[in-house]
Image 1 (cartoon, helix red, strand yellow):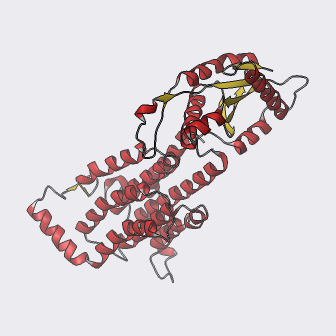
Image 2 (cartoon, helix red, strand yellow):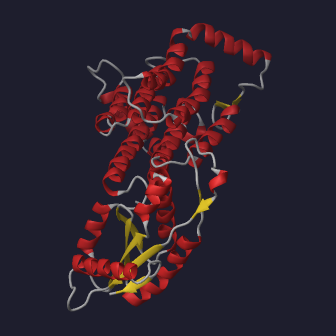
Image 3 (cartoon, rainbow, N blue to C red):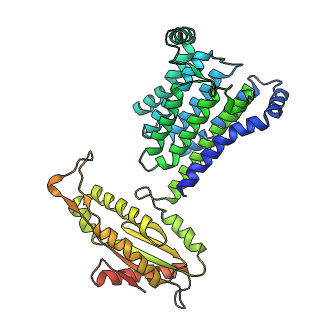
Length: 405
């Protein structure tokens, strides 16, 4: 699934929240009043909490503790700032606005290592300690913050357009920028979601700001925190989809995605099978960590320089699906990728990421076989077998070359 989809859904959900609050604010207010009878808590708080907790079962199923804790943290913030429950004073709301994006960033940075261990306790502390501190010491904190703003009025002075202290105008964009720059297998999937949640929750805490078009506080909280819950649910879906269809090592689509693609192929196309030359010998000499680095490098080059979609077939083998190209055309355009792989040098690294200066750099080559449908190979799986035979022909005749069936 392309990165623009990862970005667009959280952005759309976060953007839709104030629009819905503005357009349907009065209708939502009347509806919340009509369903309130007999409920133990305000309807807006209960509905928003239900949406926030919605991703938790699926997140637990896929061992996504960070999303579970983020959902719980959002519920805690909602209860703290709701006018009919926590009803925090303005200085404390501003404090929550400042702390929230930092909490979310820290939660994202902590690696997934479960919950029932010391790493889980650290995550729990990141989420719960600030909220508990605000709740248990609300009177002294409010007094101290009021005194602070009296002494240095510029420090937490609200900016009228956001009803927020000016540091949030620097802190929130900076936090989002850091999230979006993180490198890792899952960050491209969950970082946009965490950034969107940080934005929508932070702005929802300042429920009287003009971004919500003067909607009532319960409606703002319902729309804002409800959108946060839906964004987190989207993150769980993307993570589960990625585990099923993407190869974790290279980031390319995996074998299951290839099988589904082959089942849908019609018309003019060609398939290429690629294999890293002497990969077992390379692994034995330099170690599996270096071998993994090679596969990541090869996967990145194939993703950028092939004429079709590259898939991790398994081990050191890759498949490229070229729609609308004959085998000859695909082979000609694959030449760029083959040359790029042969020219790229990989620095040998040891544990901890330090360079082994004494061992220099290494490079690998790759062989390809290409085939297209014909009277003997009508089905995509038969074409793939023909490409595999062409690959072995390339290996038998010297490697680091492309052969067509």
